[in-house]
Image (cartoon, rainbow, N blue to C red; front, side):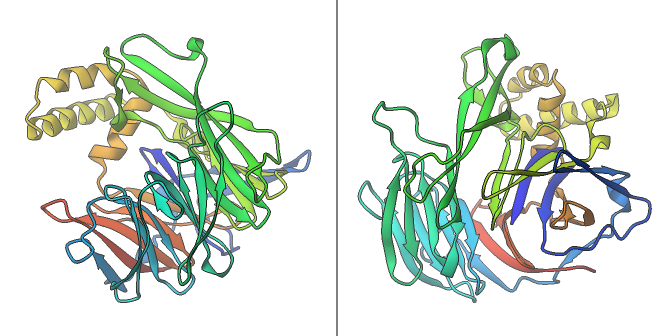
Length: 381
């Protein structure tokens, strides 16, 4: 399980170990506050021991070979290491074997049972049963990798309210539901326009009926042009993940994660406050240089001036760093209690798309922008 954060410093990977930090220069304090464990981390990330990927991938799913993946969307790893991936352009779900070979199509584009239009989440349940959430249809499809489509759970409401953004499997009787709304006008600004969102998290039962009252967290900040067009490159995305019986979430703005159990009881808060520091002038200038270079390569140098104006806010500056200036993002590895145990830097130009046990799946693209999925073993040394 992993929880991705769009901070400039990188992201977080949770692993199933229980040992504390191996570096004595880091300090972790844990106190109990009305039954909630508050985990506070101090110290520099550079002091964490460095973990590594294996020298070569275990196998590669090559997008240039049949079925010719156009744009990889959601990816999941099964218990035996096989890969399930959605093609976000063709709206197909594919199963790949342990040598990267294509086994079968688990779902095709369409509106009927077992067909999809916009899969925004894939989670793996008991016996490798797949739970695929299609936001456009507002339904969660239950699919077995061998026998295919089983059933669907609808999240459409009679009043026509917008469907949830994502739905994840937690247990046979619990589903994690994530909705998004625009924050009140007082939280937004005029041009350079910042649109803040709220993410509402709740649990539903196995039939999609609400089982808990929702909680709201800051969902991030998106820059919007004068034409009110969202500039996705400047979005801070919230963290909402289910891992077994645990639920983890955070706003994506600060290094803070909250942990709840499948009964929605608040168990733990994880904070690393040292990363809330102000961004210095060197950071700002580096981003401005990167903006000019990026849009010059895109053939739109006049757009660079607009982008620099939008970077007046630290959250947008941070996002530009993470998306454009730091092509090898650093991930921080925390144990099951939220204590840091290591760090890892991904290969240049890659993006982490799935984690299961000691396996990590990375998305890479060649010079022609053809995607491939590489599955590696994660080593502690």
